[in-house]
Amino acid sequence: MLDYIKKFKFFFIAFFIVSVIIISIIYSILDIEKPLPIYQPNRVDASLVDSTIQHKKKYHTIANFKLINQNGDTITQDNYAGKIYVADFFFTTCQTICPIMTDQMTRIQEQIITDDEVMLLSHSVTPEIDSVAQLKRYAVEKGVIDKKWNLVTGDRKQIYDLARKSYLVVKDDTSEDYGMVHTENFALIDKDKQIRGLYNGISPASVDSLLQDIKRLKKEYE
Image 1 (cartoon, rainbow, N blue to C red):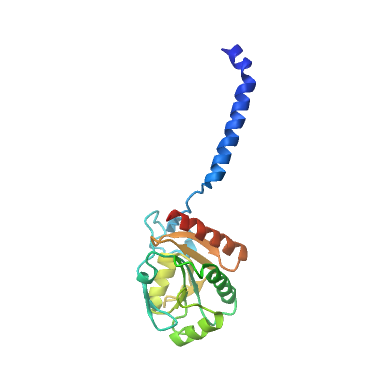
Image 2: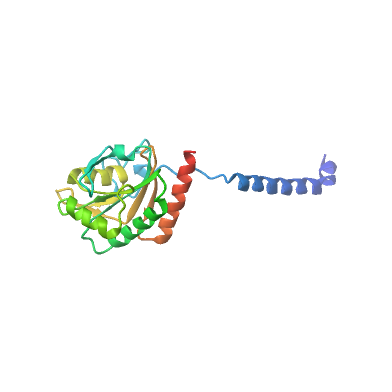
């Protein structure tokens, strides 16, 4: 047996090498990609997650909502049914990271402008300041296109709960009135209301990754 193996040793080595090359070529041609992960509360930075769901390991989805956008229209989950969307939290008077985040959201808007499957959703963390009129002024200033991007305000508790119990992207400021310390995080949400990615919204490189992940996510629905 050993003599047989030795006799054909080079054949087996060559066969193995050729097999690896062929498999690699087939893999490349098929462009096989792993699905994006589905984010669960127990796998996200605990400071961004409400204590009541930090243990949750599966079946996490974005809760139903009812908010008001920059045009005074009621926006609910129905407006995003069957859509992939990017969500973030901001406020119009922010002078630090918000302008950068908004610029990056504008860049995403430019990339998805003709794509009916993808939308944007920005929530104000200071709803008592960000009235409909204030959001409208901000939207006009930043070039928000209504059909692609809703800037929303509404009940503070609902926005707080969405931020910390649904999107998992905002810190609690420990006050008693549902205070929020927003972060630079963008969340990529799929058509099943699941979080499929979290990104640094002030990093162009991270937003580049988000744009690529939108394409990957769309392939899952083909």
